[in-house]
Image (cartoon, rainbow, N blue to C red; front, side):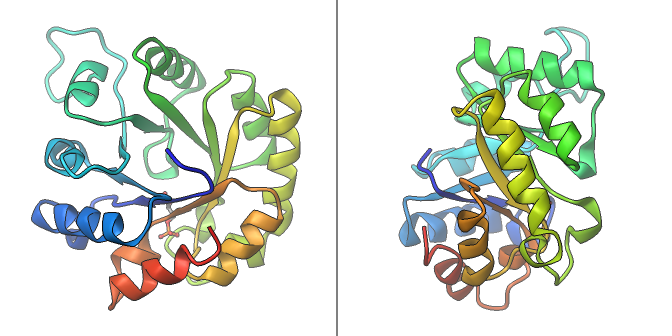
Length: 217
Ligand code: G3P
């Protein structure tokens, strides 16, 4: 994965699922090498055939066997993902499961990105040594006010606490990020990139929105 990154979380938006997920990944590939896409489990295989970094939105930690509906690390890896998004605000898991998920990623050489909603939580997660932490205040997710405007300190403070634990851990920020101006501020505050969803998935002109978001990467 190339940093600074524009990481696009496709969530379960219609505009970014099934055939539309593949079309969006193709568009991202055309625009920049600094884009990575987080797609839903059923779309991992088709999206990872397009050679840009693809990540899973969730991992279950159950052992292989009788666990209907769970998403295993083997299935994520063998369907071409290079990493996993863990503990997103819309899919929170207990701390011990975060720990186990990071361990599973390390064992399987997959990139781990753990979402956090506060600075103390980011600090605690950093002790688990994931590859990346994404700070996202939940109340700003999906809205029109960017975290970079509403709460720039949460970004700089997260960068400070995380990099103190390890300078190798990358930090992303997200929630309401929609423009190159937001990205510029995020980078200035020390982030290694941004995590974006609706700014791309709900954009009338996706190509224009993505081109703007990668302008300063
Ligand atoms: O994972 C990214 C996400 O939660 C941010 O969503 O729609 O505010 O860009 P959005």
